[in-house]
Amino acid sequence: MGVLDQLSRWPVDNAAAAIVTGDGVVASFGDTARVYDLASVTKPLVAQAVLVAVDEGAIELSTPAGLPGATVAHLLAHASGMAFDSRAAQAAPGEQRIYSSAGFEVLADLVESASGIPFADYFREAVCEPLSMSSTVLAGPAGHGARSSVDDLARFASDLLSPTLLTPDTAAAASAVQFPGLDGFVPGYGKHRPCDWGLGFEIRGDKTPHWTGGENSPRTFGHFGQAGTFLWVDPELSAACVVLTDRPFGAWAKPLWSEFNDSVVADLS
Image 1 (cartoon, rainbow, N blue to C red):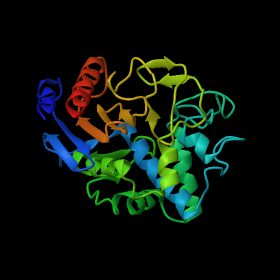
Image 2 (tube, rainbow, N blue to C red; image 1 turned 135 degrees about the vertical axis):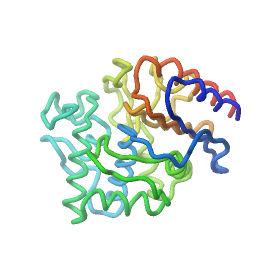
Image 3 (cartoon, rainbow, N blue to C red; image 1 turned 90 degrees about the vertical axis):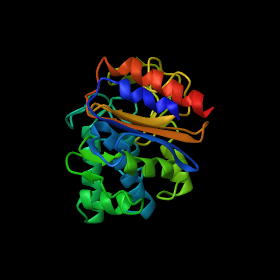
Image 4 (cartoon, rainbow, N blue to C red; image 1 turned 90 degrees about the horizontal axis):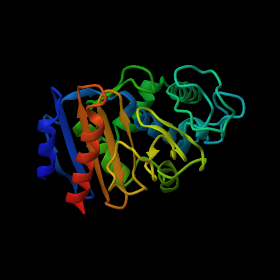
């Protein structure tokens, strides 16, 4: 797919990418084995480990977590009211979509306590080993501390297209809007009404501007990271895209990401 050649013109030192369908990786770019910092693309990976813990019965989506009245589901969906970088309350649970990296640290602590396994180990055993993600490691905070490669994230994306890690009901819930109607901010893209989120995944909905393309379907789910990274899955296309770079997200990325993603959708349609 020639669309990936666009990445060679991006103002980054290094970039790698893959386009994934039900047939596996159908196109790639760059050194797909190179390991990059993921920043917040860590969150959907960690969320999968948390949801494995739900399916295994170690915790439940309704388990109280974090702030009074908040649950695991609230934290996964950024609906707990917890602040971005601290465990302080900024709103009551279920009132606003407040993007909280600290909430994922709470979730990691909860799974560690319930399972008796250090969360980094649980993450490896629940997500990385079953999907043969050998270069992926959670070396820092659960909200933004993972490192991985395009090769590994392509395997992760394949599982999102055809889930094996999670039960069908849990997988469906992860990519469906949770606590619908909540307004909130997407970092770098401003306030959205509503600001839809699933369980660990941002749901595109009708947000504009947005880091995915304008041609991505409203059902598209995924995440981007301040490290200059993103992953999306579009169920309408039955396809996914992973792009990792080594330049932090900024003004350079906004037009390029959207234009690139529109081109990917056009090539897949």
